[in-house]
Amino acid sequence: MKLNRRQFCSVALTAPAVLAQNAPPPLIDRGFARVSKLADGVYVTIAKNGPQCVSNGGFIVGRDRVLLLEGHFQPAGAALEIEAAGMVSKAPILAAINTHYHLDHTFGNQAYADRHIPIMAHERAPGLMKERYAALQGVDKAPLLAPLQRKIAEASDPQEKKHLQSDLGMDQWMYNAIDSTTLAYPTELLNSEKHIDLGGITAVIEPHPGHTPTDLIVRIPDRDIVFTGDLLFYRAYPVSFDADMIEWRKVLETFLGYGRQMRFIPGHGEVCGIETVRQHIDLMEDIHSYAGKMKAAGTVLEEAQRRYTIPARFREFRVSSWSWTIGAAIERYYR
Image (cartoon, rainbow, N blue to C red; front, side):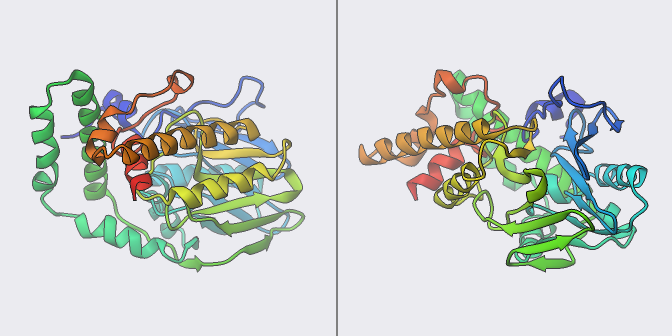
């Protein structure tokens, strides 16, 4: 099943938000994404509506070189980063960074490969892209979807059926993307911290596995800005099926240590501050506490996943898919 524009927006990893109203005028606004200057030499791309950019990105501009951030979901998203960087600087592009291997951050990499732009990522990213995506290209997806379709047919509770349908939509979205994408793999692999002097501005790339085994963040210490990838979600339940929830919590504690002046570009949603980090920790702690109580009571995992109720304080937070977010987090905590 192909998803139309409205269906896509309803099941995408999150419904990305626009920049705050007091943000500077955009450098580019294409409808599907908006590029704005955040600080001297730092530009942020906020995903809006459409499949080209499902995640945020941006670029860092120095006197001598430019560093791009994220491969996005389609080559048009990565091409936007190249175009926007060319509008503000004639310096050569050093590389593009994938903050982790997930499809909404890497499936647009072909735009970089076509222009011979190196792609930096965690050393485990190519292997996981091959295992989770390349291995499924051209494979009949009907047997993979059948168990979930049976659950939907058998579900009697309306809320449970709604959760299962959201899961089916996400799986179909992912499989459609896998079959229609030309994968371009990272070419420069990292396993430790890397400092890059772009000329008057330094980017620090740090591995911080938590959301996935492949997470990288990009800090610009002189500007008090950090691109977090999906280690931080803005007012949304985080995608957790690949997560080490305990390590992820440690990463968020690291973010708290950056101080109140730090600005965060999350993988999805608005540019934000330290309060969003606290909200994210609070949300994860709520699920952690719930999972602990359910397991201690002898509740089987599937029943615990089904019975979780979103607290009032998080009711406005986005849930892209029950099993990719809340269900996955409970399962990881049960382990």
